[in-house]
Length: 632
Image 1: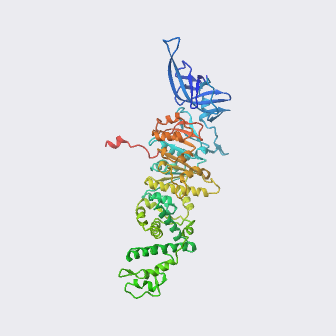
Image 2 (image 1 turned 30 degrees about the vertical axis):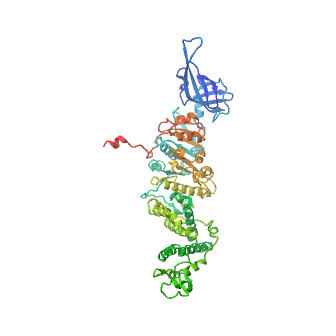
Image 3 (image 1 turned 60 degrees about the vertical axis):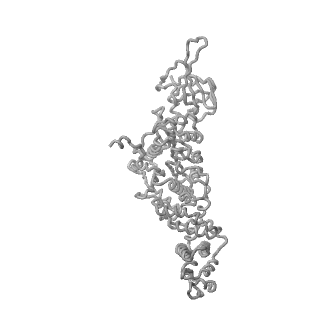
C-alpha cells in the first residue's frame, strides 16, 4: 500500500507543525517500494490538500504517557512529531516553499518513491546534439544521506552562474568537497568544459595534489599552477604599479592621517616624473616639485654639507630638463658673495652643480639657486596632478618616490613630517629587501589587460598557491588581483563573454567587513559580490569562520554547502545571514560527519544532507598520523 496514513496534524504555528502518530503503528512500515521508518529524524512525510501535496521534514519525535480518566491503572503511550514544511508538489512538479499552511487534523502520510524522485531528482535533461554528445545541465555532487540510492544534483547554471559558499570547521571536508566538484566538472569528455575558467586562491597549498592529474584524465583540460613562494618554478608576480593607495596602506600598515597622504603623493610623483617627455602639464608639475624641495632644503637649519647631500640625491633621482646638475643659472653676485667661502666672487652665470659646491663648509651660491627655483613654483599643483594615468613603475622607484614625497611634504607643510613617516619608510625598505616584496614587480606588461590575459591564458583551471604569504600580504595580493580581474571582466565586449569562477579558500583572511573603504570608496570583494554576476565574475568562498566574513558578500551567495560547525558565533551568524535555514537545520550542522554537508540554495530543489565522495586524487589536507610520527 502506497502513501500510508501514519498520523494527523493536531497543532500549527508559524515555526512548525505538530502531528500525532497513529497508535500501535510500530517503528516501520512496508510499502511496495521498500521499507520506510516512522519518525526518523530528517525523513519526509506528505500532507494532501486541495490540488497540492505538501512535503514536510521530521525534525523531532516526542513520546508522552497519558492516563485515561476511566482507566487510572493503565497508561497509554502516544508519539508526536514536529515537522517542518518544505515545499509543495503540484502538477507533478516540486517547488520549495509553501503557499499556505495545511488545515489542522489533516492526515500525514509516509513519503512515496515517486514523491522522493520529484523532490530529489532535478528534471532537467542534458543537451544532446545529432552525434549523441551531451552538454550537462545538472551536476551530481554526492548522494543523499537519508536516501543513499538518490544522487544529489545541482543545476549548473543556477550554481556556477551565481556566488556560492562552503562553510565548515577545519577537518570537516571543505577542501575535499571543492576538489571533488571541480574534478567532476572536468572529468566529463566528448563535450568537455573547455570554456570554463576556474581561478583558485589556495591559502594552504593543498589543491595542486588534487588537480595535477586533470589533464591525464581529460586531455582537453589544462591546469596551471602558480605560487608566491620565492623558490617556485612558476612564480606569481603582481604588477607593483597596480597597487592603489589603499593597497599600499594595508601592506605598510600606514597611519591614515600622516602616512597615507605620503603614499598618495608618491604615486602622484611617479605619474608626473615618469610620464612622456612631451607632456607639458607634467613638465610644469615636475619642475614645481623639484624646485619646492630644493628651496625647502636650502631654507632649513641644517648645515650646508647635509643640504648639499640631500639636493644631490634629489637631482640624481628626480631631476628635470630645466633643473639638473648641468643646468646653467643666473648668478646673484651680490647676494652670494658672502657664501663664496674665500673663493672669487660669483660669476655672472654658473651651473647648479657649481652653486651646490662646498668650500670651508659653506655652499657656493645658495641664493642664486633659490631665486632660480622661484621661477617654477605653481599655485594649482593638485589640480594639475588629478586624473593622470598610471605609469608602470618598480618597487625601487616607488621607494625613491616615497622618500622624495616626504621631502616635498616637509617643504609645503611641516618639518615634523620626517618624524611622522620614519616608520613608513623603514617598513618600505624592509619590504623591498625581503622575499615577500620580490613578487611585487614592474613586470613586462604595461597594461592590466595584458597582464590578466597572460595569467588566465588558455588553461581552464588556474591554482594560485598563496600559502607562503602572511595575512597582510595575502590580503593585498588577493585584493589587487581581484580588482584587476574585475576591471578586465568589465571591459569585455560583449558583457559576460567569458565567465570566470573565483574560488577563495580560507576567505575569512581577506573577505572581511571593511568599515573604511579608503580612497577607492568600496571593498573589492563586496563590489564583486554585488556586481560581478553581470560581468561573468562569480565567487565561491570557503571558510571555517563565516562570522568573520563580510555580511554583504555572504548575503549575495545563492547556494550554500555547510559542513560541521560548532562555534556558537558562527552558528548564530549562519542562522541570521543564510536563507532557507531554520532552527532544525542549524541544530543539525553541529553534529555532521566528516564529508557530510547540508546543501541548499537556488540550484537544488530542497535542503539535502549530502555525502560527498572522496576526491581522487585528494587535496593535501589530511590530518597528521600521530601514532606513526610518534613511535619511531
